[in-house]
Length: 302
Image 1 (cartoon, rainbow, N blue to C red):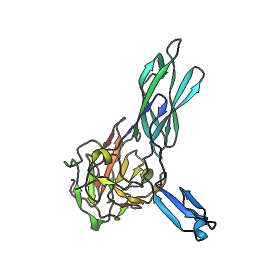
Image 2: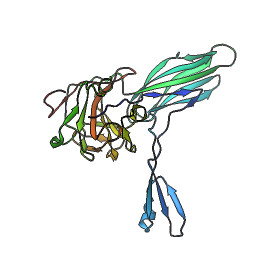
Image 3: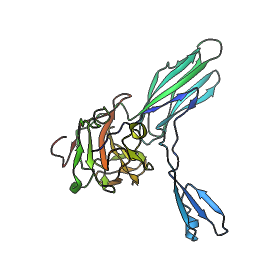
Image 4: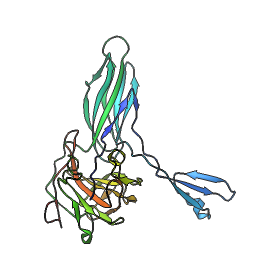
């Protein structure tokens, strides 16, 4: 039986220092040049390989990248709070004070905004409420998707080959599909390496491919897995999760068509065994929710 996903959607920032982790390389390359000098790099050494150098790949645990980051800039008499969207799709953010001494915002906090793909939005100008020193701390919550999304009534294609069709857990599955993000998800049994196809066309919004662990420890694995998130034209988002390490075959920002191969199934993250977790999600206003959908080849809704 597969396990669902509980994706972290909070980026916390306090006292002007954002603590969200940025993406890191998933591997390091080591090679020795013709003079016997050892080199390390985060990209394959193309020229070195052409010259016959032996290249060793060293796996490195990668941390997931932040969806958006809080950035502050000084302005005379004020601090400007910006949200920088780091992904290839819209996000909604909510900026709040964690501490405020003689501080006010224009607009007042909490301040909410939708930030387009790879864009920046000014959330608030922070300044002294009256004469004296202003002290403050901030937090910024982030949810993927545009809350103005209006789901269309469409038929989704099977995301795996029909000959592999076997559903391990469906809508409202008691094992791990009881929270709002996963309630209307389907877990397809899929041996590792099974091709995964786009069930609907759209733009690749997020990818993660460097994670190599799996298990039922929710604290360790509940927010981690290799996955592809695809943004559809109506603002809904399809999630394809638990992909194999290095099993993502598309890149963020890429436009894909329905039926295009986008990855390889695996067994990563919060899971009890190899499977593909598929869900269609929307942002319902700072709240990520799964929604019901129809799928060609699945005759009975789980």
